[in-house]
Image (tube, rainbow, N blue to C red; front, top):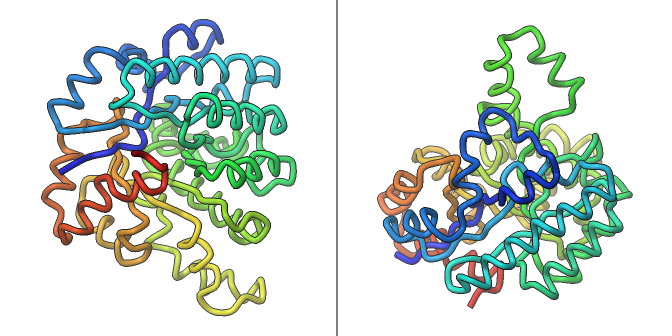
Length: 319
């Protein structure tokens, strides 16, 4: 089974040091793996049959939210580093650009440069930037660039705004609060809500060719999309099914970090196998279980091959 993995993180130590970044307690444990693009990473890919990784910034939200001039400089350096890695290993890597979202006009320019000049296959944006979501009119240049370039935006989860974190988790043990706000729950609710904001505020009407990718088996959207359609649609005066159809027409979903059958089957039933993609979330998740899960999943062989590589090759225009 050929495998293309879509949410595989990298963060060269040179960029981390130059930007003076604090990756946080969890990500800091993986700094060596994030920095490695020529050694152990390739061995892991070979050992588990990963043909290609699409590289993206680990914890890239810390770059996109920097003050504009710093964000532009460091995002460009990161994109150049990933371009160099793809040049050294053209059969093994592609990359999503990291964008300086604190300056959307500069972000659009960097998006165009990374795709047109360096062959990046899309961009990864880590949630809201300093409180600004992708439905805000200030972000229009970035969304328009994605349409013109014909590449998707991977919407990665991010922490909710500080006021939300304080209200929901401020009275908890710091480690517990951090994981509830992040990968244990809050990330996924935040990202699913972000997609619903975009769908209900007309983003996909203004940008009919825009395509998103979200990870983690759909960020709770497959399970709750019908309920959202039923409750939100009448408020907007939309016909039944309009919200659900808008989301399923513009969103692709990766298996990133999920290795149990019920979420997979739910996602196949709601979004369809044609909109699903394989991912490991390397190095934050283990490659072996992710590959074994897809190989053994109770789905048809045609659907397995679509998820494993064919959908990614089509969406990202990979040869």
